[in-house]
Image 1 (spheres, rainbow, N blue to C red):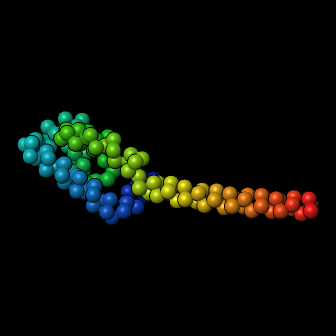
Image 2 (image 1 turned 90 degrees about the horizontal axis):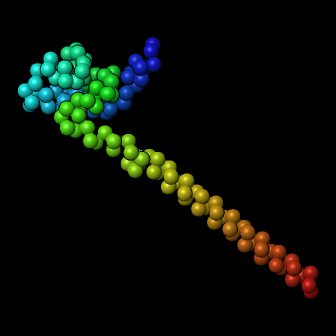
Image 3 (image 1 turned 135 degrees about the vertical axis):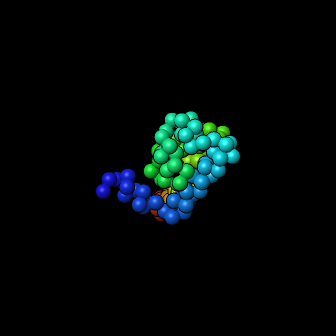
Length: 129
């Protein structure tokens, strides 16, 4: 089984539903503009069957085709923000956890250093006495 097919079979249901909705929304956008499948496919640079697959929510349609379709309806501006680091909540949470752990380990090391310093000072006082 090709890797692509396996990947498509593993799509989370919510993601598959979102892709289907995107395809349906793109079909509505085309129809509202009174464009035929043939003329819209030509503007996209694809065949009519590929456009039909896009509009039916087929997840194997290339991202470049999806991006071009979004550009045709002037919605491509959001593409640059979809996976931007500042919106990656999972990675941000990991960064916060790592920072907290670093803070804890530094506080522990600082406390141990202070205790050693106190211990060394008391040994020094004992030697003087």
